[in-house]
Length: 453
Ligand code: PEP
Ligand code: CO
Image (cartoon, rainbow, N blue to C red; front, side, top):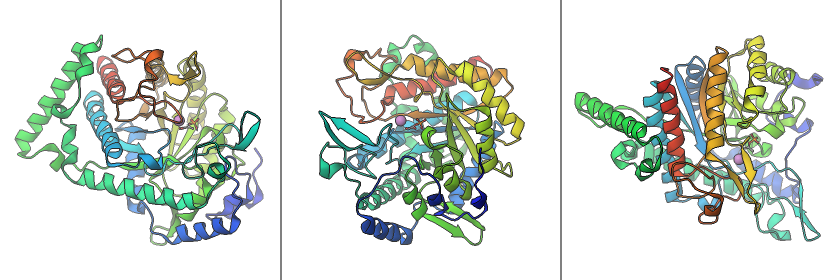
């Protein structure tokens, strides 16, 4: 790795002297400057004390005392910023949270891929159709998906629209969580018809019954519904990909003596932008947020150690979450080296398994999908590898929706490739639907219970 001499002089725009991968090219520079100026003056989406609170919770999870559930769409879309969509995502996450709490016997930290997950990395800058080339679609924060010249030109105004949608989403989430909505996590409200189709129906029924009994018990001794006794805190996360967006909401908090990225509680660095000499790593090193780093095939021990040295030089607890996404076939081979590499640095990290991004495949007709069995297999391997190395898996990162889509195959209802056309809505990666997501949570709960953990 070559360390650039000006590394010491960090400021929210210092990344601009580094090579910035995956950034759009805006033809209208004056408008871009105006938008960045406006966003820099607008109030932040989250606060520094919430961000610090999350960092403490992640530090607890690093020690094995909490588990992180992170989930949501691959990419949020502006059109999908609706009451139903937000409610159903929150509902599935809160229900999974309860299943995991019960199965793991620890508190669960809830983080949505929500309220800002609007920019996507692409394998090519340009998309060509029938000899015609246009800029690739990079998410609603950047341009529009129809394949026309006007739609594909990166439009600075969309940065502001994204900020607004993120604020609307989080505002609604906060109101729901503060109100009685959290009571929906009571099993009486769950849609559990699918359980009857599962081979492990009895085990799942047992889990649900035990959760119900525990809640009834807690409520009878406290005399109040559980949601009134526990604040259901909920955090937001997105890939910190579009650096001008992140930069514009990066604020210095004098009383805390740190810079914070206040677009979100938990930004993460994607697989394609984790170059140690790149602009993303430069930006992330200066913010005080807890941060995620996606790691997978291709990440070497040296590279990971360099990243930890740059991003967590003081080995601060709660700062680093490593989200590994190898694929069911590669995890056993790839993960142990990374666990050893981290151990050598002394940096505390939270290990989280993303069993989605290493298991994407295409059906015979070219539809992108993921097989439920591969997702579960990677999760099982992740628990096994960490256990066998005296490490521990402290969280899961999923692409899911609370709706009844058909994007991933398998699960209790045995969705096949032929079912995918029925309700395939994602324009990017395929997500677990409500039932499949609940089944993943039940599988984790069942796995850890039978392990006596
Ligand atoms: C994602 O999380 O949607 C993503 C692009 O993942 P990765 O960086 O792991 O490929
Ligand atoms: Co994705």
